[in-house]
Image (cartoon, rainbow, N blue to C red):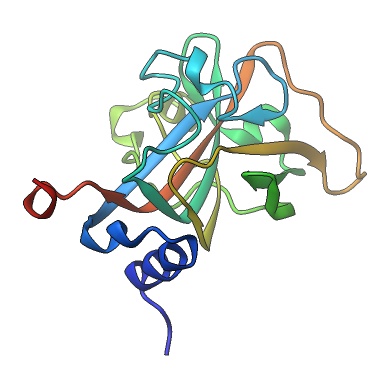
Length: 202
């Protein structure tokens, strides 16, 4: 029998000795950040990105009563104007992102490629009804999954730093694709988030 998201969170919390998480409430949640430094790392410098169009976290670790069970991991491309661009249009149809997810001092996902692009439209609707080319319609969506992976099922516990290392490759030639000066890569971690339940803690 498969474990539910809540069961996974409670199992890991008990292993870490965090018994209070059983009194918290879980809901859908997401964290995102953009590699504005073009360093190949996302979330590690989130504290410097005090801008909701860039990130929704103030640091790359959760507070005592917070945790996130990552179920979907998504990458997207932003240009210097803040528009979300089509990943394949910018880097070519042979491009693939390979990433590591690091929690604490351990790489819990290593050299993981993500190939799928376009759907699901979790954070935006298609904009083709607005008219214009498909690329123009794509650019009006903010934010949007461009390259994604589903079913990760990895828990980021409270008070532990995390970040994402990524590289872009050409899957045909195997060559590394350098980041462009006019675009940056962003990342979403989306899943079940545990938040403080005031009904049981006050």
